[in-house]
Length: 119
Length: 114
Image (cartoon, rainbow over all chains, first blue to last red):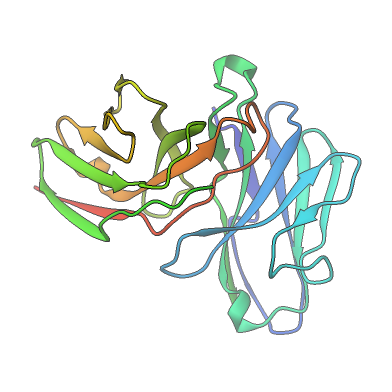
């Protein structure tokens, strides 16, 4: 069964609007990571989300543009705000196995991604 | 995390072995070598990882040079399903457990011909 599920799987949005992406994990995890993968490119880390504290953003990503919520140990949301065509990407949620259900704590698991197209 | 260098693309024939190289000349003593792959339209998935000794699992083998400055991911019999982008990533063991995250380079796009 899947470790991580994401909603929506894909969406087409208009410029200037916002989209919230949900990430659900099948076990409690300490940290959740949000990545972006632009067309034809590799993955870039946006931020790390810990439950009960503010997310930590990587260089080039800001909270106003990509606000993140982490209400509990199995769930997180990423919002892409005031979208432009440059935000068209795949957004992926990721966690470590943490030794749960036989999964290695060294292994990073990824959701299927949310494919976003901004017109 | 130290940087890795991989060929942009490689081709293989189905049912033949594939050797995917990775150079990491600035690797530190506490860096683990991880390999992930990303199948088309999917998120990345773990393949294998190691520190110094060669490693085998049901998916692949990892051969690590004695000086640890390079490694090779070996797929013993490539199938069409193995067509993917393969990422070689170094991760500092100091972070351990569930701390830290993987930093992805451009990877090697493997094509498998029938």
